[in-house]
Length: 347
Image 1 (spheres, helix red, strand yellow):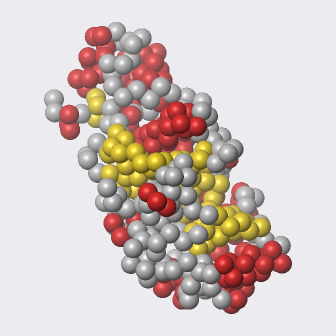
Image 2: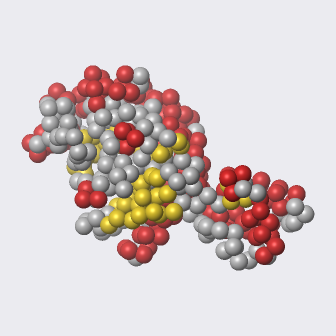
């Protein structure tokens, strides 16, 4: 049987695995064993499943494949950041990043090959979307970064952010399945409160997250609270307007009581005026929120330029005077194109 014709075994639920073994005249508990190898132990091959008989492993090999990712290239930044170029089973590439600090290590993972949206300041958006990642491909990125965190920083991974390549809410079902595996005691057992899903703002899907009572955190890549400015830099805003976004976020907070984080880059001549800061304050006031002001990372053509320190200080002062939590986040991994907005498979 051709490899391409075999089903990826990680697409099966535990119940389906148990049923498969029963259909083969074996005991159901064998499915439990294989499931543990696939998720808790992140087995790359059937051969490595050492508590299963050789005959059973050969039977699995004949029927299934494990489409495991491969870290094709690893780059280390002068600040300790690690970027992985991850090769998928069909030879497409995505990138994921390990961001270390003194107290934590964070995995920044991708959810799509390319991106469904069209933000002009983001290198990934220029790739366009080639396909969604499967749950196991998202999960594997986390496992790889956890291994690197233990190897290079002598501690396990502490946090996960869906801020890599792609718009997570345009791959909602697979992202949710991946998070279920990551947080399950049968998977990595991480707390959902240590996971943040960052979206550019898809109102319908934000409402669905609220209805699904998800436990992870929400971040919104906002960048302007004035419609025409936001549309000029994030053209999809013409379809998903700020009013629709705000209504969806209001619904999110009413259902979850979970604070919203806004990711916000200030650019010279685009959104660096007092009017822009005042509009952001007005947008933030309807629900408890926090603003991360992010340093801009150039993507070669010079169309967007980081705002002056004076403009950043004006934003901080305006937000703090209005009782809104604000932090200024400096970029990590810029020297290896691993910083926010720079992931573009240059290698």
